[in-house]
Amino acid sequence: MIVLTKIDLSDDSDSYAERARSVQPGLSVESVNALDRSTFDGVTAWIERGSTVALVGSSGVGKSTLLNTLAETNIAATGEIRDDDKKGRHTTSHRALHRLPGGGLLIDVPGIRELKVAEVEGALATVFDDIEAMALNCRFTDCLHEAEPGCAVLNAVDSGDIPARRLQNYLKLLRENERNSASLAEKRSRGRAFAKHVKQAKAQKQDQGSGN
Image 1 (cartoon, rainbow, N blue to C red):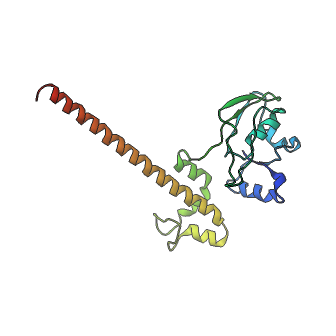
Image 2: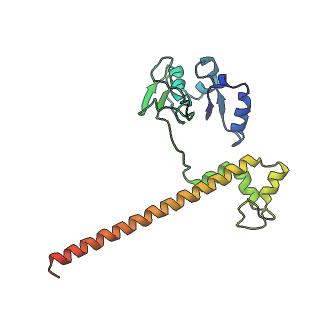
Image 3: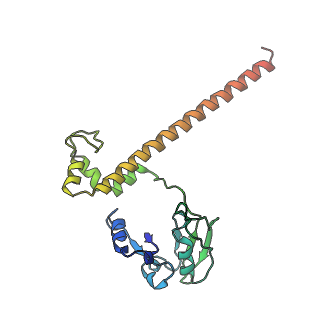
């Protein structure tokens, strides 16, 4: 579930909710004013007695305030967004499990700095199934959906069947996956080279010890 906080700071919070829902059909999106519990009905409906939920998001988005409102008491410190870079301070420095009045459990974690998608290929096929299905109609099997002639995906964007922003997000995730895969391959290569160096050093030391 996606929770959009601080709706009291926007005159058009509904448009942000619609943009979030457009990511994937059936995605649950709730908009709340973290200081007003009357806006929490959609959120609390997900926290049943005996269930465990977690708040995940960047520093400053209002996780600690959400927790305090859900817990009906101030159990987490809150902070402000910095004026210089508009980013949040890490008011939560460790993981903590809290029992809520309704019987559910809530895990509060420090603000995240970076998100990476696990099992990217399967995730993309699920979230962007419309783009992947359309790509089967491209003229070239290795089409990058950027400027190739006969690209069915670009044609779908031009006709409005696929939002341009959705294609941009899809391509961005593909590029990130390529970079992460390359970085992983480099790390493995360095690891193998280091292991080989250690093995050679040990062999040389043994030779020296045997007088060879």
